[in-house]
Image (cartoon, rainbow, N blue to C red; front, side, top):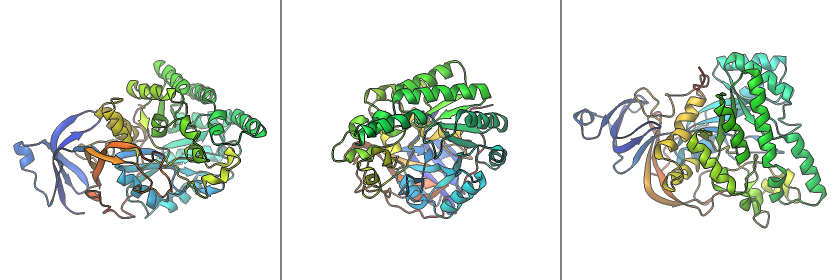
Length: 467
């Protein structure tokens, strides 16, 4: 470790406070904060000093939904743990929680071990794992208890993708009952995949093969129906529920209703649903394939309801669902058949900046930005206050953020290992300048100074919103 660092003169923003303060870092952790210019702050001494005058000093982002190296549709997500975590750091994210995959017929342990092997020694920033449960049986249910004990405290299930990740209502109920006992959190991909497959088959039979039909068959009503069903199953099981990548206003309404009833139900949305729409899916010359993800992009009018949900706390978290596939050679697998386009968008590098733009545009406050991008995901997945805030004792995962710098998002300048940007040409105000991970500089004044292997695996406690 390189001893002590002091960050001077910045506006420290957390989910709860904004204060002009100097921050002292020692041995990879936040040692102290003191109001800038006070004797206490003047007394901070350190080998390294960072001038943050005119800048924000914010906690490193926590992206609780990424898919590095995910196998999907006969190919793999194009970011490795090395390239993906480096890109995350460039975007001010210092912790990811990725998804280890259980394959049908295999144990949870095998899936988890496979993902540990992919990530270990390769990450620029810290990482944890959720577990995708594709095969619920007696053995799997026993394994869930063991995983919770060792810090993998969340389990993802799919109401979509029959034949791949799909679980039926009975399997979902069993897993939810188990998580009610062991303290785990079920994360749900809520779309009625059985019905969607019928609509896909019918669309293709009509010759409707272009990318835009991906959005048309994955109907908002089928997202809302699955969200409602997941909530009711969780209620029967007495279990908490976290619904991932909420994109439809009808699904937000289901979450809001459940939360108004006092149920432990949580919702996440993603930047693509806040900033992109079916207009992108309809782009000509197969360009729309770049925007194929599930849940799909929705018509523009859904965006306002998602922003509203973030303001009213009916949605608590913004994650990326980062799952990049190159346009050339990967997205193109679906030319002539939209159902063969690999599902996923690149975004791990863009999330913090896009959400800062939302602050500039008046959708959310500065503190809410930090809440939905840092603090709440850390609490939701058992990492707070080690991650997600700037407070004595926390890991020194700190971003110096220039709120006035202007940038144009482009595949030519991004660091994700993918040949296009979902936000190509978008002008943003605000940019990451320097990033510390556990006190070590990963980005230094817009230069990458980190290295693969700095990032360590982070076991997690259970959801901190549950007693």
